[in-house]
Image (cartoon, rainbow, N blue to C red; front, top):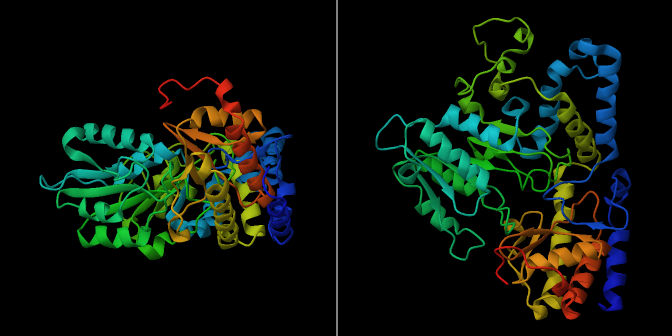
Length: 427
C-alpha cells in the first residue's frame, strides 16, 4: 500500500489535467488499467464512427463511393495526409498515408538507396531497432546483389538498452550511403536527437531516415525543418487507428524529383488514377510512393482518430502531458520499485525520452502475467523489460499510481511466482 498522500497528489494532478475530458472519447477496457498504448492504442469513438461512416457509404453507394462519398475514397489518403502532416512537422505533400511500416521502408529503400559507387554501398542500422527494419534492409541488399554480411552494419549498444549518439556518428563511415535509425527505441524509450544525427549524416553525404513508429502521436517532430530525408511509421500505437491500420511515410521535398522505386497505379496523379495508362505519371510529392489501392476500411479509423489530436490542441499539448505522466511513473518507480529490484532504463532527461517507461527486472515475464491478472495491462519485451505506456489522451495519473502500487504488491507478496517463466527467460 503506497502512502495516502500519493493518492491525494494523483487526484490533484488529474483534476488539473486539461486533457482528462478525452478519456470519455475512448472505449476503456472494463475492469482494467490499459498501459499498452505503445503496442496498440485503444479504440476511440471518432475512429469507430469513421469506420461506420465508410461502411454506410459502401452500403449506399457501392463503387460510386470512390467519387461521391462524404470524403471521397479516391482522395481519402491525401485528405488524411494533410491532417497528419503537423504531427511530424511536414508539408502535406511530403506525407503519404499508405501501406505498412515495413512495406513503406521497402519502398523508401527502393527509391533512395543508390549503391552506384563501389566504395559507397553500405546501409547503417542499429542493433536495438525493431527487427522488421533489419529484415527489410537485409532483404533489400540481397535484391541489389549485395551481401548483408558485408553491406549492412549495426551500431552497437554499450549497455544493451540505449544508443550513444557519438557511436552513431562514428559509424557514419565513408562507405555508408544510407542510414535507418529509430526516432524512439522501442525497448527503452530513448529518444534520439533527430536534428543532430541528420546534420552529421548530411555532412558526410549520407541519406538518413527514421522509423517513427514509437514516436508519432507522442513526440513532436520537425522532419522538414530538420532536413530528414525520409521517415516511416505505423498508426496503430499512439495514433490509435486500430490493429494493422494503414501506415505512413515522409519524403523530403528535395527528393520529390525521384521516380518511385516500386511503382504502382495508385502512385499516379490523382486525376489519372482511372485513366488506365501504361505510362506511369507520378503524383506530386510523396503520394507518388503509393503502390496499390488503399484499404479504405483500414484508412478510415485513422481519420477519425486524428480528430481528437486536433481537438486536444495538437501534438505539443499531448507531449506536455506525456512527459508529465512518464516523469510521474519514474518518480514512483524510483521510490517504490527500485528497492524491489527494478531498474528504470528509460532516459530521465525529458528531451531524450519517448512516451513509455521501461522497467528492467529479471522476472519481467512473470511480473507482466501477474499484472494482467491484477487488472493492469503492461507489455513485456524480452529478456527482462516491463513497458508501461501512459497515453496522454486516455490515461490518468491515478492509473499510473495504481499500476505501481499493484506491481509493488505483486513483488512484495511473491504473487508472480505462480506464473511459469517464459521460454528463454533470464529467470
